[in-house]
Image (cartoon, rainbow, N blue to C red; front, side, top):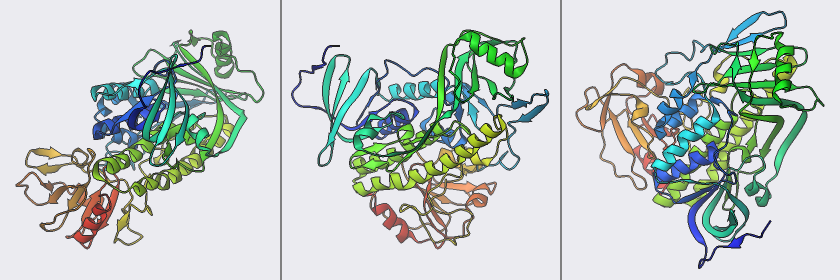
Length: 511
């Protein structure tokens, strides 16, 4: 192979953020930066979009992020919410699952109560289309070779085809997967294990002789097998566990033989796979999410078992957390120490998700069955940052809602222009202040929040009425409560005492 030719240019190309890896995590980060006007480049070593269904579960918290981005409707249209799940034992008995728990159904504080099944490539497609609409693009077939840090920036060597280029950036973000070049060159330990005894064969393929009404799995002494219909396609995702030491065989005849052995059925026929892979239980978490001007996100920082459908979602939420902090530093002059809160907030979340997915993996290995019960543990609405340096309140420790928690939604809010949900009014890359108390003329230093005053009858654009009481139920305010919601939809500050000085001080820290 010929050595790459150096691009003929004076000096290095420059940007603010160099994002390495254009999976869901990198795409989400790029979209958020594009919306905030922060310069970036998004590169990926692959020649084009990644194929395969892979992480097919989109959790409710991620759907809330997609709603803020404006792509939730598209993603949902290409998926299926709360897909029924059937587990068949060797005697042919069927256990039904996938039902939304009553505790989560029809709640005004939760717009999405169950996970969505959709191929991962559909999620990436929606993010890429939005990125293009915002004027950005993925630079495919572009590989990070090396980077160095000096002062307040990095210098990276990238290769596109046969052309090498030097890129200067303020920060580099590795969203380049489990084999992350960014992580390796930062010298960050990726602590955990690779279990060769826990492997599965994956394939996206057409299936005849099986309806698409539910996700079906079979329990067998040799292992489990499942077929999940992939919405918006004519395919199913085939998943079959491998016995320890068994040679992975991805030919159609081998997939069919395993299907017949574990289901006891010959009427289900598989057809040529459009994509296939072998997954190994590689379970790891980095020591640090940041080394100087280098950051890690998604699978570059944490690799999970697919049990519970957490990995892709956790990476998307990493990006959502990091992006608004980059924007605050670049656009609002926030101190660079704000970026330290990224690791402090996101690493404990990844550790929790690892523990959850490991427990579900252990159950799957023990029972040779895919868990079919849905509960609140996997939908990621309980992810929060209590104890963060960015969380402040004067509430009792036993209060059900505290600073650092996800801001609950609320429906039936009356405004001068009609009825809204709270989620229609918050986010959009800015702070929001809910004022349950009297009006006060206050000037804030730092980023200016959108202020929503709670009144009985809205008479101006900054007033809303809690006509059904859903907002009061979710936030349990006093008649002076102030709630400051961060750009990423988490509560930064609650003051039941109505301390506007605390709000002013909080926002001033971002300037």
